[in-house]
Image 1 (cartoon, helix red, strand yellow):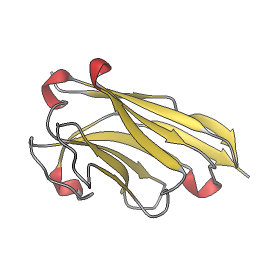
Image 2 (spheres, rainbow, N blue to C red; image 1 turned 120 degrees about the vertical axis):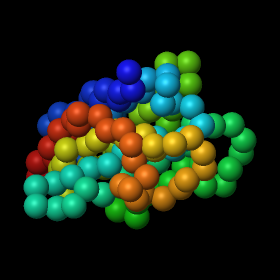
Image 3 (cartoon, rainbow, N blue to C red; image 1 turned 180 degrees about the vertical axis):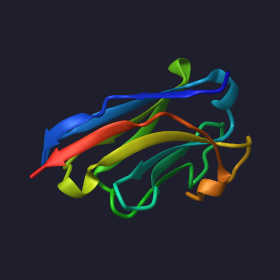
Image 4 (tube, rainbow, N blue to C red; image 1 turned 30 degrees about the vertical axis):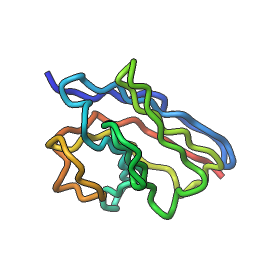
Length: 130
């Protein structure tokens, strides 16, 4: 069964840090992009970061949205089929439900289009207070 299970959300003050984790089923972990998206009330779901789980040194194997670049770091532990999102210097604008997601198909399909997403986690809430 393909699934993604997030954890690590919570409430922090501005300037604080959180680390999100996403355990990905083996059947959808390999040779594709894994994503973090977020969605605030009244806003569209937006891509935050993605990472390529295949092999090779690709220049665009890790990508960030402009709003989080320099503050968030996405990484993966292949032995644990787990993708992390380290979030530092959090601001109230980062408050959202954060979703882990996987591309529908294996292969190099970069970008943050939700049309390429075939699998979603249940989400974990991040709340940043000022």
